[in-house]
Amino acid sequence: MNSLTDPEKRIGWLRERGEVRSANHLCRQMLRQSGTNRELALFYLALGYYELGSLKQALRHARILHQMNPRLLSLHLNLGCIHDAMGHKGMAIREYKKELALNPDCDEAKYNLGTLFLEQRAWKKACFYLEACYSHGYLIDTVVTKLAFCLDKRKQYREEIRLYRHYLRRRPENVWCMSNLGAALMGVGRYREALRYLKSANCLSPKTGRIKRNIARVNEVLGVR
Image 1 (cartoon, rainbow, N blue to C red):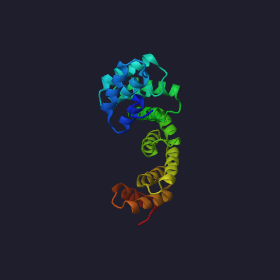
Image 2: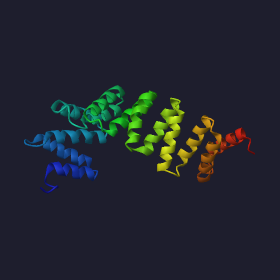
Image 3: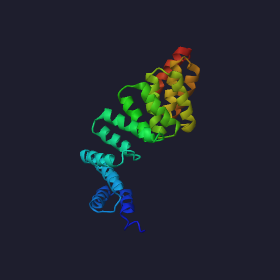
Image 4: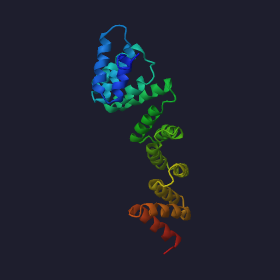
C-alpha cells in the first residue's frame, strides 16, 4: 500500500520529516475511526506531545495506552521520559526499570537510569547502568565522561584508568581522555607514565592550563627542571 495513503505509514513519514504536529493530527483522526490501530495511534500521539513539550497531554495518552497494553515495548521508556521531564524523578526511575523488566536490552532506559542516579549522587547505581551502556557501545562519547566521573567519585581509580585506556584506543587523539588519564595516573603515583600522556595532550591542546599545571606538578615530583 502506498505510504502516503496508509495512515500508519504516513505517520512515520511525517515524523521522519519533522512534521510532528501533522503526525499528531493524523493520530487523532485514527482514534476517531473504527478499524484502525489504536495502540499505534496512541503511542505516537503520546510521543508527539512529549516532543512538542505538551507533557500533561503526553502523560494522559500514554496512560490510556498503558490501560490497553501495559506490556507494550517502549511504553514504559516513554512514560519514564515524560515523568523525568516533569520532574517526577522517582516515577521516572520506576518506569525505566519496568521497561528493562520487559526489554533487558533497552540501552536508552539504562542510560537514563545511569544519568538520574548520577544526578542523585548514587554513584554505585549510576556506574552499574552506565557501564552496561558503555560495554554495548551506546552513546560512548557521552557515557564515558559520566562513567569516569562516577568511578572517580567512588575512588575506583584503577577502573577509571582502564576506562580511559580503552576509550583512548577508540579515540586515540582525544585530548580530554589523555589529560584525564594522565591525572588519574598521577593520583596513583605513576608519574612517569602520567607525564607521557600529559605531554601528548599538551601537544594537541597547548593552551589548556590544566594540562600545563599537571605537567609542572609531575616535573616537580620527578625533579625535572
